[in-house]
Length: 229
Image (cartoon, rainbow, N blue to C red; front, top):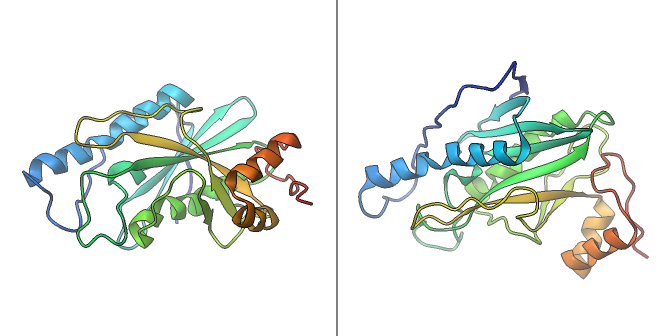
């Protein structure tokens, strides 16, 4: 398992080389492979534009999947963790006979917490697990979905799952050349087990309204569950 590597300064631009897997690419294989490999530098540039320079980064590779990086950004007392690598390939319908290696939604994940309260850097592996889920389990990650890692997001965390929120507020969508879909940066909102169970019954919008009405600080890494009575 990787660990965060603190960056002494702005890192050298790195071009990730994408290993194309699955069925043959339509059209010219080399052309599409090059287009797909070029996505990640654009994604990292968009993250830097929106969040500033990362002060640490780490990489995790799971068997049979592409490399997933997690970048850490600081903004005052807020720490943001963003994935890099999830959008290299489009998410595809798990029921499809042949996976489309070009068209399909592309996303990265962003989770924000208040720093200095908990050891949230241990979020690295759970976040990488979520980012790898489309490759491993054929999951299409979209707003309103619940993602469960089955363990605390970090040591002592009261959360084992997250709610996927709507994109566009923190990091703008990244438009790509046709025929590629844009990359969307999806915020993740940590949920307690009670909140996750309540959301399954009442839906994502109802839970978010509860949080809003109660003034819940969703960036508090040690917050209690919202009142769900």
